[in-house]
Amino acid sequence: MAKATGDDERERQRLADRVLGWVEDAIYWAIAVVLVLGSTALLVAQFVKLLHLRDTPTSTLAIEVLDGLLLIFIFVELLYAVRVSLRSHEIAVEPFLIVGILAAIKEIVVLSVEAATLLPKGPEFSRAAVQIGVLGGVVLVLSISALVMRQRVRDGGPQAET
Figure 1 (tube, rainbow, N blue to C red):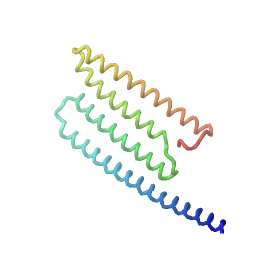
Figure 2: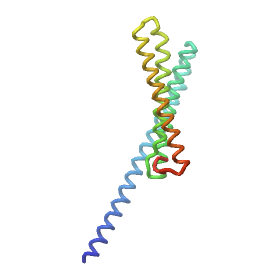
Figure 3: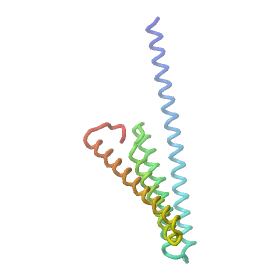
Figure 4: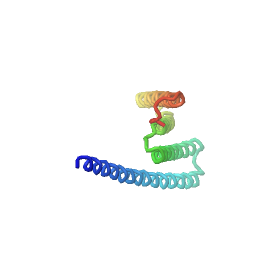
């Protein structure tokens, strides 16, 4: 009787594992759909913005377009992370590091343009310069982390991060 109870318990655990796996996949698919729709909407918005800003100065236009494109790259990189998670049923770390790098670069670009207008305002310019420096440090640390992760995978380290 004890053996039958143990078999029943294992069967319930396998069923629960399969059901939760399906639910997990469904949630990942929903996230993927939202990311695809968001990326598409952002891309269309960038084209519309480009058409409406044709009479603006080139530097403003470049910053606006670059800001939007970096945001699209972030969405696409998150979509890649979801795709890897669906395929391997493991969370990939590297795409999130890349998202962090892109987000920091996006902020550096925006702050750099704002800093140019803040030059006459000493303390505010200094604050913007410090923020740019800190974000540059963040990019450096995240980049080194991504390189270390790739090297570990190449050298046969833990595969859970890929």
